[in-house]
Amino acid sequence: MTGPNWVRWVLYLVLGRLFNRPQLLVALSRALERVGIPIACGLDDLIKVYRRTDDFSNRAHFENLVAGDFVIGMDSGPHQMRERMALGDVLPDMVRFGDLAHTEACARIQTIKVDLERGGSFDLVNDYLVFVAWNALRGAFDAPSSASIEGVPASAPPAARDAALAVLFQELRHVGGHLVVGGVAPRSVQVRAQGSADALNQRVARSLADIDAAWRAGCPYAAQTAQRQAVGLMWVGHPAMVQAGALIFQELQAHRHQYKELHAFVGQHLEASRTSAKIREEVRRKVRGHVLECLRLRPPFPLLSRLLPRDADLQLGSAKKTRIRTIAAGHSVYLAIAAALRTRADYDPERALVDWKNPDRLPVFGVGPRACVAREQVVELLVSALIGVLSLPLLGFADAGRGRIVYDGPIVTRLRLKRALTAATP
Image: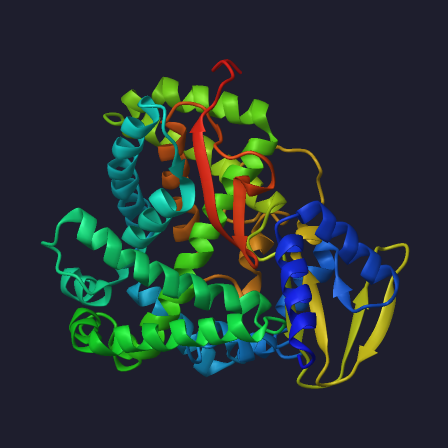
């Protein structure tokens, strides 16, 4: 987008707020659909666009990939599939991913509990989620390559390691946030994102020998393309998982009765789950339902776009009022994911996820050959993270008014919590 910088600032701030107010974004999306804007607001329409990868290209977001080309911005085809398979090869399986997140969550929660008992508060994003997500993601590497990327030896004191990681997390956040709003970002935000992207690429370049050693045996193609794979894996994966964790807790706060019931259930079974695999899986199954329901109602990527490499016909609208239109090459179609997922207004976490076939939950991860390659891993990480939070006393926002959640564009950058004043009964 071109135009005065002040216009870009306005659009950047408006889009950032809309992305974090899903009900308002849903209403706006449906209004735009009614006036003829090519925007897929229905679930069937969304899935249709997702599956027609030759007609609707991910290259719409290519210019926002400031850290370099990556699989999510590539045209569909053999090369994109090979890149996708390489990521699948280096990622831990979903059980390992969840276990790594659980280990870090338990460690961080112990410190947070002490602070809460003293009447303090903690930042859900910067004191907890960023570390839980990173510990799971570093499972894609080994100890030497992880330490090389982090820029601090594994033997460093915890405070020194956390300080070094904070720099890495900020680089990832600035690059990741640019993916969804880079097209309207003002100049200062663009410069910041590019600077972070350069720093991230330099960080990985210094670590290439260690990454190559970690990936060469089991993932030869990933090792050959390690610079691209490692950079992309980090800047896409980490900010998205942290954002999802923050959004889940926001949505649970909007359903306070459900939050209290889930908190009581986890508290009742937490001790037994440490020694019983059956009880542990029952706890995870119940929490998993809430994770998926919260993501349905508050998706991390509520609005995306697809670029048309060629003219294409597209039918949008409800069964009673459909319109077939021809959209010219070079134009975009918008995916109103927040609107499409709200096929049900009620909060129903008990619906089972069977073989990843719940149609109104899964489009949050994409559909078809472009679906998130790590959707199972991401869900298990978020389950582990939420169980950690639920092991704490009932929580509420520590700050009042508009400052209780701080945003940088669409990204939640601070969300302070403290012990809730209400009684811990459902």
